Amino acid sequence: MLKVPGIGLSAALLLVPFVSAQNGADDCASATSITGVGVYSFDNTGYTIDGPADCFGSPVRKDMWYAWTATTTGLYIMSSCSNNLTGAGATFDTKIVIYDGLSCSGFAQLDCAQESCDISGISGARVNWSAVAGQQYLLRLGARQPFTAGFGAFEILLDPCDTLIDDGLEDNDTFATALPLAPGTWTNLLTTSGDPDFYSFTLQSGERVDMLTTQASSMGDIDFRIYDSSGTLLVDVEGPDPEYINLSNGVETVVFEVYEDPGNGFACGQYNMTIVIGPDPCFNLQDDVFEDNDTCATATDIGDGTYLGLALFAHTDLDMFRVTIPDGAVFVADLMHTTSNNCSGEDIDMYLYDASAGNCNDDPTVDPINSGELASGWTCADNEILTWTNATGSGMTCLLRISIWPDNVASGCSSYDLTLTGTGAVGPNLYCSPANPNSSGLSATLGTSGMSGPGVFHLDATQGPTDQFGYFLVAATGAEPGISVSQGMLCLSPPFGRYTATAGVGLNSLGRFDATGVMQNLVGTSSTGSGFDVPATLPAPPGGTILPGSTWDFQLWYRDLGGASNFSDAISVDF
Image 1: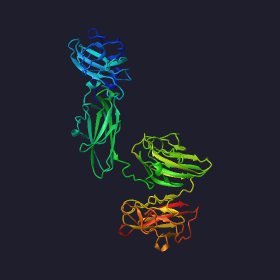
Image 2: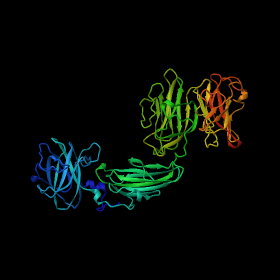
Image 3: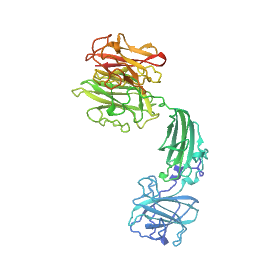
Image 4: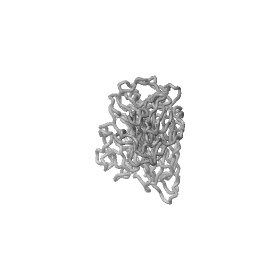
């Protein structure tokens, strides 16, 4: 984009000289002479009204008058809106009127403004008019409200938008004329308040388009809107770098609008743009087996072990875990991930809270640093490690929050591996996870099992194939990766027992997956209707009973379509 005089917007602004001038006159006939562009200070304390009530039907109160001469032909701006660069602004609510010529009787009004800055919290005025070099104009400035006075400064400048020309991607200023774009980079593009830019993108299922933008000048406030192919507004984006992901199962076309928000005081903005289109890394990333554990109240109990392939999504789908740390133990959480891209992409952080203290924070948009947590790990580099020593004199139940830092998100998701040490005997530890997929496309899991129910442990199985039967197995030790059996992996070491009708009273775990993939108990051995309440008595083999302090491993065997069979992942439980 070229500016005709050969200078950019920021340079044009710097040409406005910082000039102090005496106040304007209290009456039109004695108007103070000023010339060209500049910044002029004023104070209307003690002034009166002199002039017609021709601005919105009311006068300019305590007005002051200037006889201004244009030095260059062009579109001019006079503004009392706050501007940190030039020092313009006022301590009171101003009103401005521009008149053609110096007649104090005809008052040929060119423009009038009050409360026209379009910036929240700023009640200044801004007018514009076309002037001819050498000609004179009356400028009238005063208060909008009665009995109001104060001091400030106004600026007069050539409108930098007046000399800009359209960029090479025009004409694309309506939804109907949206320009189809492929990946690439474009510089010095122009959008104005009356001439937005529309671009269309065709995305395959699971593809994402990123529009990476930067301001090409110091002026302009560029914002974005995203529409579907029918013109329905999907989202209004304030700020840079809008994005869209095609979550449908087919091809989708979306349209991005780039428009100038007049809140900056100018009606134009220049920008640079890079378009990136590619597969969205979050599209095929599935929830892990510990879901739904997104809040302090729904934290999942885990203990020592390594947990592979866990998933995070920004910012409402974090992971909360409950751990029990014995007195004197050193708790270590070692989180491994490789998607932070040297601090420019997803950044995973960890926070440990005292579960009884009420300090748990499950809002990832509020990341406390030393604000109530026992320990934290929040570097922006790959991998995190959190260490805390329990020196309280008793065991403590803690909540471990794992989340994506809200200000540093590239794709909005990440997978990670987690290793914990230093916890007490707090229940299950999954392995051989995820299991081999079944005909539903998912992997059956025991991840929702827990220490509940009338038995010593409650087994639950989810993500199974609808209407297929299964039962649970038990063994004293596990084996990973296990051995291949039909479509699955058996991850228990022999001898292992089967919770079936032949195992004895109360030891039958026969169930069937319902339409949602949850194993429903068919023989009355589950207090919740799903899964199986494990009793203390063990089937033979291995025989015997489950004793406190012992560890037993469980897995589900189940039928699948076509006469095949499969297994869930396995779970090791410390009792």
